[in-house]
Image (tube, rainbow, N blue to C red; front, side, top):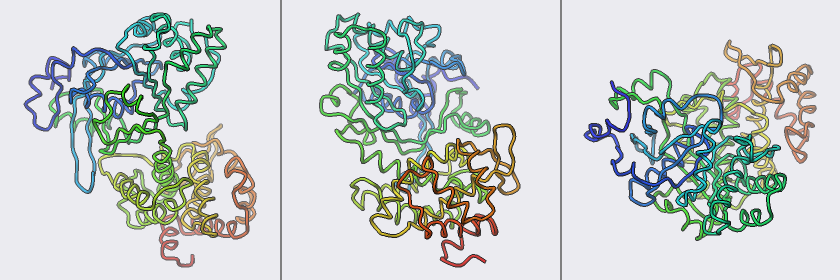
Length: 507
């Protein structure tokens, strides 16, 4: 079985189940600079650009910059930067399978050794878009020198690129770029712009350049939503390659659902020629609705379900959704509590339709999304994703949201460590230890030494760094949380869940 590369595309075009690029795509100019080689960008942003090229709309390719030391670029070089996107899942009730060889990427440059080539791109008038996904820690202010080879941080690298472009085109306003970070933080574009401007001041760059950044470049907030697990496990990789008829070290899997919401007006739409090629690519002046739907219904349900699923013995999201009790809990949680209490104006039918789509995505048997991975930074996710909805529900209904309370009780139980090894804390579920990957692990280990569940809950609820300052601490909540904790402790998470759904009493 041969490897995927440009020379064997011609023979692959005979496969009806495979979308293969035309030879003409390799002649397209480079128009996009992308920071990040990861599967997520290749499965979403690059997917849209590849699709636009196939429709003859965008007609441009991407130069990718690799900044981290992990991994190498050998596979990109050997495969002429081609890779396969294997989409599997349920879309509007129907099974969808799609295999696309993406030719969106023209080159991949290693920042540490090829920084001069990155700066050369600043002189290319065709390059007018910058995309990034450097993880949440990538968009942060660190002391950086743009003349370092290369600068340390992503904002530093971006500033160096912008300054090189400013110099190359004499500060001409027509050569500003559209910058679209996809990192999962609120107002990612605005935050990146503020950091870049601060670094420009710290580097003593001239006022005219700083004005050019602000007036001629566009930093767009964006929201991305697609499950892209990346390279499949070895057995699944072999299955895909046997089906496709070639080896692909860069093959990634995705779900059918895809959303890239970019905050911008008509001017931004004109500057992004790939707009309009897919209903999942949205450019609107306000994208807060998309952020709230995703953050509360998808991420919030993931967060309230992850500890419960793991304690019940489920490894993946799809496996848990096959269980009637768990699927009922998650569905009720989203439809009756999260949806109606999203702290943003959302029409009821919009929330319900989004919920149905999310539940369909959760049931995708092709995506092995592991609950243990979702449970990382559990406490921070509870605070950002769940607590605002909890408070809004309580305010609107003047009652506690029962499903959320049950989920929070399970969260507290999940954080119970039974073993400590150095700085690591381990919980126990179904006879196996699990690492509690959370900054509050030590805190919960200490509080679980309190013998009375009610006293422990009262103490934990006082911790504002977990719940925020406005979270209720009344006896009704204390009693309810302790009640569910006692049940999980005595009869196990699955039995406690079934009793909860039946509105019964724990034995």
